[in-house]
Length: 359
Image (cartoon, rainbow, N blue to C red):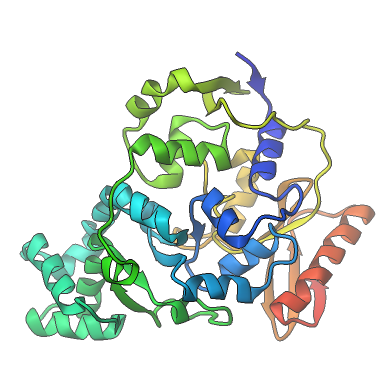
C-alpha cells in the first residue's frame, strides 16, 4: 500500500479543487464537482469560483441562482452552502440527520423545549406552503402560535428540520454582512416535486472525487455524518487504498486521475472565508499547519479568508476602504511576494477594490 506524504496529498487536493490551474469548466460543473460550496455570507462563493474558473464573473453565478439551477440552503455540517439543484434534491435528505442534530442542541431547544418537534416543523411547512417569507416574518408567525417563545430560534429550528431554500436575491453578489437578511421558501415548491435521497455511498464517491485520497474521518468531518466506516468498508472493492505518513488508511476512486508529482509548482491562490478546502478533512495539515489554523479559525463560527503560497496557507486577507489588505503569517521571499502581489492585483477589480497593502 503506497504511503502518501503531506505534500503529495496537498498537490492531489489542489488539482481536484481546480486550484493548481484554473479550469475552463462552467460554474455549474464546478459547483457540482465540489458537491457544495460554503456560503455563510453571500459573497464568499463568488470569490471561491473566481479562484477556480478561468474568466469567471459574478453574473454567471447570479444567473444560475435566478434559473433555480443552484440553490442556497443549510447542508453540509448544518451550515449554509450552494449546491446544484439536482444534488440538493438527492443529498439534503441524506444529510438531514446532521441538520436534526444541530436543531437539537441547547441553543435551539431553549425556545422549543416541551414542543412536539413534528408539530413545530409541520407548522413551519404550513406557514410557508406556496409562498416565500423573510426569516423574520416566519419567526413572527411562529411566535404568534407559541406565545412566550423566541420566534427567531423557532424559525431557525424549522429551517434546519425542513428543506428550505433561500431566494436568489439573498445570495447575490454585493451582499456583505447580510447573513440574516434572508428569505426562505420550501424546497419542494421552489424546485418542483419531492426530494429523493441518494445512497450514502454516492455522497462518499462525490466527496472522494473532489477531496481524495481521504480517510473515513475526513468524509465525516466534511459532511457532518457519523458512522461511515461500514459504508466505506462495503465500498473497498471499488476503491484504491493508501496510507498517509502517520499510517492512517486513505481511500480514493479507482477512476480517479493519477496523483500529481508532489513537487509540481503551484500558483498563489486566494480563498474566501469558510472555503471547504480548509474544512474538508479531519486532518487539515495537507493545506494548513496547526499554528496557522489557530489564526485562521479564531472561533467556532469563523474561518478567515486566506491565501496559499506553494499550496499551503501563508496568510489571511480582507478588504477595507477599497484596499485589499494582506497579512502574511511568515516572511515572504522576493519571488513569493511578487507572486502574491500579482495575484492580489488580479483580484482587485473582481472585488471592486483599488489597492493592495501588506499589514
